[in-house]
Length: 86
Image: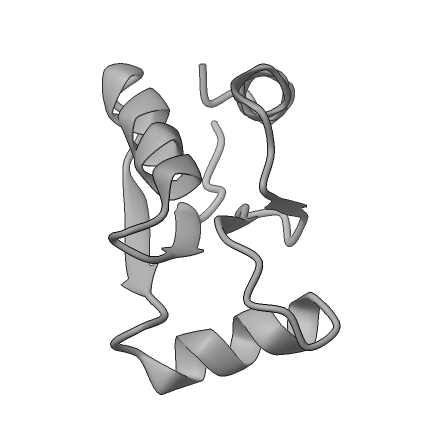
């Protein structure tokens, strides 16, 4: 049985790629933690540290510790399949 912790998505409400990512996760009924980096300074710090000073969103952290930054729907779907979330 997979006890992998959930997914955390760092993003902003105004970001089209973030909305697209949330829509894909919602369509597959995959639970995730949403952190709006415009409202969460620690989240913003994490994103900037992870992305060499850039506020690149969405930054998606998986339970296995791997990270995708600004993935296409195809790449995100592949990762969800690899991690057996879909």
